[in-house]
Length: 332
Ligand SMILES: Cc1cc2nc3c(=O)[nH]c(=O)nc-3n(C[C@H](O)[C@H](O)[C@H](O)COP(=O)(O)OP(=O)(O)OC[C@H]3O[C@@H](n4cnc5c(N)ncnc54)[C@H](O)[C@@H]3O)c2cc1C
Ligand code: SF4
Image (cartoon, rainbow, N blue to C red; front, side, top):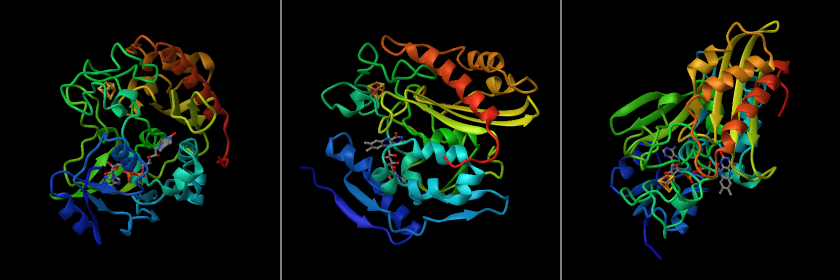
């Protein structure tokens, strides 16, 4: 039993002030943080409960998009009618994750900051540079079936486990943050980071930063988009590979493409060259495969996960084909 302090924040400023003490962590839905504490992976000295802060609304923005409160529940976000009709790939991505009970509890902010599902990160008897910097990486040379094929380092080959984040990456969402230094906006592509030689740091947040909202731009690619998740079981499993795809079409020709992959890297993976390779091209499986090969040109497998490279190529072709065919904004 490890003791820790608990305080409920009554405002964002109160939360940030309390989080200033080293060793404290915000707790929102608690579905990831409390599991990690029970497994003795994380040992915060204090919890700052932010779950009652008024950051749970979903509102229109002046730019014609939507602002998703950091404390809006994953389920409330997925079933919001505006999200379903204007951003169907996002709704579909959320509903592909976890279980109904978890989605009722989990918040949008917490989903962004959930930790990797690498087995060794959870197993305190094994080395892990993310859990204990400098201790080594159990996955390199170990069992690495679920690990990264893109953007990994010789310190860490973990992947980010979120589904929601993959759709947010494809949509060019913006994360709103308030911290000790004031407010700032972080483009989604800059929110998560690659492991490099500091795998213990998942994001560009600074200590004490509170995520307050996630802004969706006006364009949601509602007519031609999808989220495809490939996993070991049909439900209640993290992605081996997932694809968020959004297209603007001109007849049978691609005018603009968005493509983000989950389950392949330490962050949702976007590749401007792969997206550019689709522009002006007919929406055919051959063109989609060519773009997939651009995206996967530097992919590198490990002993147990090389299958992910072909799986990712096939998933990209399937997701783009489905997106190109979709008309209207079907409910997930
Ligand atoms: C069995 C199981 C299966 C799952 N399957 C999936 C899946 O398939 N796909 C998927 O995407 N997810 C899945 N999840 C993960 C789940 O979606 C996350 O646990 C959840 O989204 C985390 O949200 P939370 O509010 O509970 O976060 P918490 O556990 O409360 O917090 C998580 C982290 O975020 C920080 N934090 C929370 N809110 C903020 C904020 N506003 N500002 C700054 N920091 C903050 C906390 O300090 C903590 O470090 C699964 C979880 C479980 C337990
Ligand atoms: S892949 Fe990353 S999280 Fe997994 S054991 Fe290696 S350092 Fe730890």
